[in-house]
Amino acid sequence: MRKLTAEDIDKMLNDKILENLKVVVGKGKNKKVLINKGFKIMHVESGLQYTVTRVDRSGKFIEAVSGDGQPLVIKPKDYKNYKGL
Image (cartoon, rainbow, N blue to C red; front, side, top):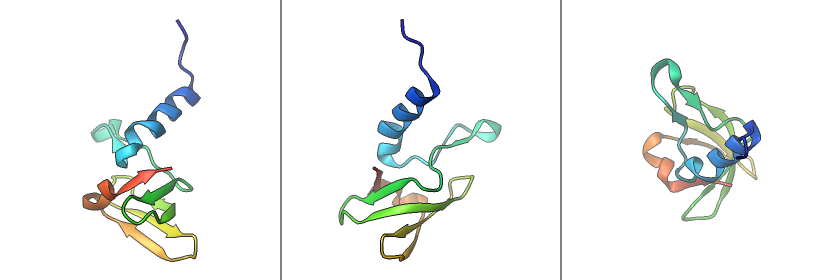
């Protein structure tokens, strides 16, 4: 049986959990932020791509910037409209 490395786990998180743009997993002191600065996301409907510039540690918002420098703040109700790249 193969042992999972940290890289394997990160890939699984990016491939599966982040598909629906989950920002945090766990509760209370066990919360872990899954999306960090530099992560690439795409608006599903428009296909516009953004780079995450800041993530609220509690998951209440994500700040991102488009390729042409336009800022964006995404609230939890809108996370379903984005997916990780």
